[in-house]
Amino acid sequence: MQLTQKPTLNRALLVSIRTPKITDIEAQESLAELSRLVTTLGFKVVATQSQRQASTRAISVVGAGKMQALAQLTGGRGAASHDATSGTDEQIPRAMLNDAPVELADVVVFDCDLSPSQLRNVENALGVEVFDRTGVIIEIFSRHAHTRTACLQVEIARLNYLSPRLRESNSGNKERQMGQGAGESALELDRRRVRDRLAELKRELADVQEKMKDRRSQRSDQFCVALVGYTNAGKSSMMRALTGSEVLVENKLFATLDTTVRALQPETQPRILVSDTVGFIKKLPHDLVASFVSTLDEARDASLLLYVVDASDPGFRSQLAVVNEVLDEIGVEDSSKLLLLNKSDQLDDTQKQALRLEYPDAIQLSTRNPADIAALHERIVAFSEHDMLEEEILVPYTAKGIIGEIRSNMRVIKEDYEANGIRLFVRANQLDLERLKKRLQA
Ligand SMILES: Nc1nc2c(ncn2[C@@H]2O[C@H](COP(=O)(O)OP(=O)(O)OP(=O)(O)O)[C@@H](O)[C@H]2O)c(=O)[nH]1
Ligand SMILES: [Mg+2]
Image (cartoon, rainbow, N blue to C red; front, top):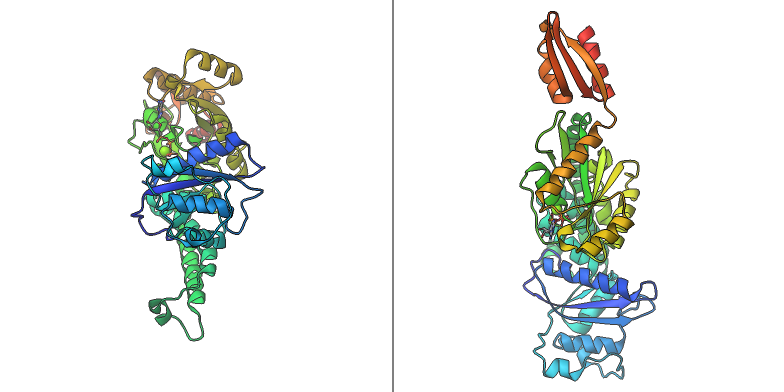
């Protein structure tokens, strides 16, 4: 499997292994999601196969009979089609192959993770390219990463994924052998290169992250709201609606890989910042979680987390559970949360009523409904002012320069021009008020 190569192949056969650990419904949902992931890569799903197995660890993943079936669907280019087999379990019905306009698949995608040797065994048996779920996700991340940080994080995850697979590789072409040191095998050279590159990438990432941290600490006094949630839930659409920014919205999985921060619009006093974050997915590869923890620092530092859920997706409850799990893992459980049941335009009245009972504290809304967005704006502002104090401050005319600063950090409710200065009634957080008073005393 070559992840870097842009596939010219695009007819995919999906394979689901049903183990006793998961229910049939979970397997079905997972397969539907894999189909969307594969479509995001530009593949066309031409067939789907499943097999019950005790685990996903069998040396060739599927049984001999099923492998024959997969070989039929992929044109029989590998060793499996030449095997005389007695296995007959779940053969493809003849009608499907002869009568129906079945397109042969030229790539096979498993809805589970495969070990390097499993991957090689299946590729040999079928003679076509084979992906596992992690490989697909990493490929999508590689294609969607744009900023320096995202590219570095994805490249680290990709090399971590590929390096154990290098161990299995037994080829060493001439070009590679020419560059190697004395006594070093092609495989050792590959491993050394990967190690060196990883170290270099990690150093570079640490530098970029340090700069991002500085930027975040400059914003630390401001009220920050982070949009978090499952991929395709509508976070970026919400970001656009709340901030009027042009962030990317796409009906694709993992359209957003970078955190963007913008001011809430119409702008408030003080300003409220909103950030869009990378989406989550079930069975997210651990390396990728680790890589994206820093991208989610915005979420960790946020004063309020908006959990965006696609309420029109029947599987949204388990998606929400995954979001909670990952956020707990990275330690954001202490922030205040507000659940947004998005895409309510896709729900009928009965469904809306049932959701109101199930999630009494959640907000049902659609990013496409301006009235919903205005109401959410109000809720965010009210929340940001919740812990604020109201104070009366006299700013002498000699310190008039401070007024601009007050306006950007505090909400001015009333101002009176008096003989000895401007009397302001403000709402602000305690820290800002104390700072201001000190400055006025100085
Ligand atoms: N019907 C409907 N569709 C919506 C709504 N909000 C967003 N969408 C659609 O949902 C899809 C995904 O939207 P995004 O905003 O890109 O989702 P995201 O959560 O940022 O996704 P990732 O960046 O991939 O994690 C797009 O096709 C949007 O047009 C809504 O309220 N109603
Ligand atoms: Mg997005």
